[in-house]
Length: 182
Ligand SMILES: Cc1cc2nc3c(=O)[nH]c(=O)nc-3n(C[C@H](O)[C@H](O)[C@H](O)COP(=O)(O)O)c2cc1C
Image (cartoon, rainbow, N blue to C red; front, side, top):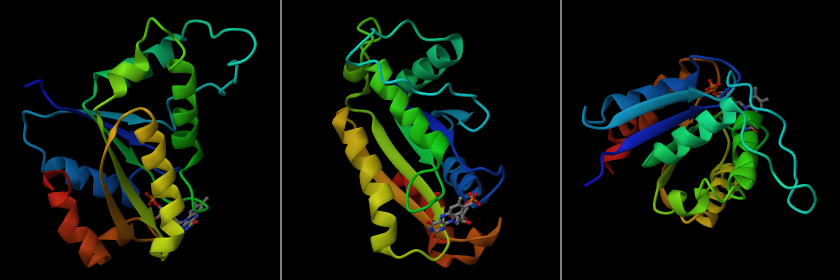
């Protein structure tokens, strides 16, 4: 069996917040045989996405984007570590997803074929939102990953506002160490 490799994509506009802390707790329960790759999308300086689908063709990837695409394709599991922002994903996570549209159109990458079968996960803090208010962000990500033939893992939620608050959410506390085992 091929070795599992988890890519954690951080997208909160603050480091060490609830979402990252929850993700680190969940990751600590992964067996040592599972490789972990942590990527902070907020400091990765992703370029603006340009839609060149129907005009000039896409050129080769810049070194930063080639590295990110490579890390994405190397992973067996992709974990979006994303607080709820305006009922959606934070801009860096959304921008990362938009770039998939470029990567899909580089034949030499074989991106779509290589993404099929990978597992997608979502770890998300929110401040008092209801299930109906969280659903658009979660379902949008689920549909985007399904578009590439990925398998949906699960969503780990915490009701938390200030950093550290997630520890006051008993369900998040219980679920975080079990999240990837489910
Ligand atoms: C720009 C922005 C938008 C937010 N929008 C929402 C929202 O739509 N719904 C919600 O429940 N919380 C919202 N929040 C609160 C955050 O989701 C919450 O504080 C969360 O704990 C932040 O996660 P972090 O500590 O990992 O950064 C928003 C926070 C910010 C900064």
